[in-house]
Amino acid sequence: MAAAEGQGSLQSEPETWHGVVQRTLKRNDIRLVSYVPDRVLTTLIKNLHTDPFFTTFPAAREEEAVGIVAGAWMGGMRGAVLMQTSGFATLANALASMAIPYQIPLIMFVSERGTLGEFNYGQSLVCRTMRPVLDSLAMVHHTATRLDEFEFICDRSIKQAIATQAPVALILSPLLTGGKVFEK
Amino acid sequence: MNKDTPAPARNTKVMNRFDLTKRLVARLKHEEAVIGGIGNTNFDLWSAGHRPQNFYMLGSMGLRVSDRARRRAGAAAAARHRAGGRRFAADAARLPFHHFLAGAEKSQPDRDGQRHLSDHRRTADAGRGNVRHRCHRARLRSGEQRVAADEEDFERLVDRSLAATAPTLIALRIDDKPGVGTTDRDPVQIRERFMRGVGVRKEVNTG
Image (tube, rainbow over all chains, first blue to last red; front, side):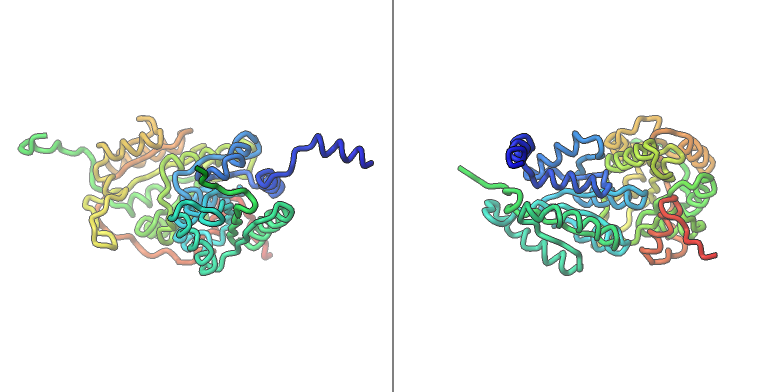
């Protein structure tokens, strides 16, 4: 048994955070993914593009992606938006005037910049606005830091967003993703 | 152009947006979705006679959605329709998105008192650079973009759009009359009625 388990672990791919996102989106029938490109999200975005289950495309702005995914929900298709911290900072109006009052279960994955080794001062400043904005809008948000609990957070948050028709932000900490570092 | 040279006479009539909205709605026979933009546009749409397939934008919503995005979203909806998803009004008429741009003759000061170059002002130049540039960005071919000459031409173009398989754009010159009426400001009801109107959700049987 132990030998068999050992062989299995040799053959299987190691679990990754982006693999968890992809699998969880599928499990919850989220087929439409719009994003603004981001280095941390690159592998996830590439994998979503190559998976025929998903309709994946970039948006010029985060609010554009939010509008598309909101429209998809009203048309009967579930969607999610991928972005970076600085992109979230552009969204207060779209969230306050559409996603929340119209009760749209907007599912957002935000790769977190501005902390744990940030090299860009602007990113470190704008990062500080993210959670206060989420809190002042009374939006559900979780910060994922550990791979072993990520699937639970991800899956349950999506299910809650859909069941309660409320947006959710899943913040992907550098502790989970590795983040982006400046090395010279 | 030499400033002494008179501007060429326009062959497009200045029309009224509410009248055109009523004409548009009257030609919809297949539960097509109509999205009213902010302010006067959705006031007129509401006053033209509410339909469950109407969606009204209350406030700006932060949605400065590009033409390419509209087209992409339409393509996504069409793909879902082809895949056997629920009927979505835009798909039902096999038209991902039809875009009616109503441009006032004069630009209006925005909330900061600045003269703005919104779609409305740009469309006042219908047939010239800006609208064409927008069409180019949206990858609309020349046959998919038209400027309505008058009300009768508008109705003809709407009928042609409804029969088309690709996105279309109809640009209009309109007067400066304000919107008619006021949309009920209940976003949850607007969204819920729309989802039922396009068949995503079923009506509750209260019998």
